[in-house]
Length: 82
Ligand code: SF4
Ligand code: SF4
Image (cartoon, rainbow, N blue to C red; front, side, top):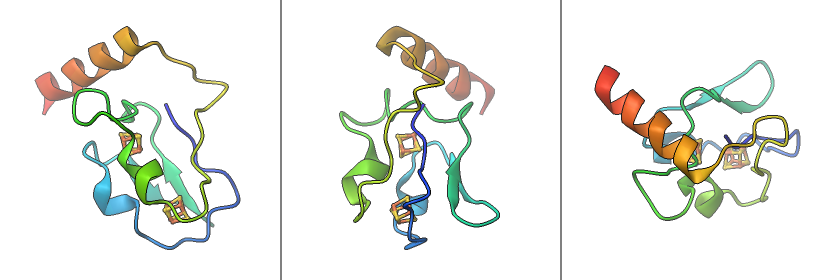
């Protein structure tokens, strides 16, 4: 999944763009539910939150690296349970 770093300025623009409703306001900055983030695989060609973030603070989470196949499987499982 992706992760939001502490450079986040709480501008609110990414949250409504997430097709998986994975972004939420945490205690101090916005955060991403890693179990819901497919890096937009299944929905879009590029991560929508990264597209709109003005300060480029949403990298891949180095502690949660996933292959495209894993992300696609996650997407399919999310669709099946919703
Ligand atoms: Fe949501 Fe896509 Fe950003 Fe993941 S990469 S948090 S699924 S908008
Ligand atoms: Fe934070 Fe970037 Fe989302 Fe704005 S778009 S709330 S700066 S992560």
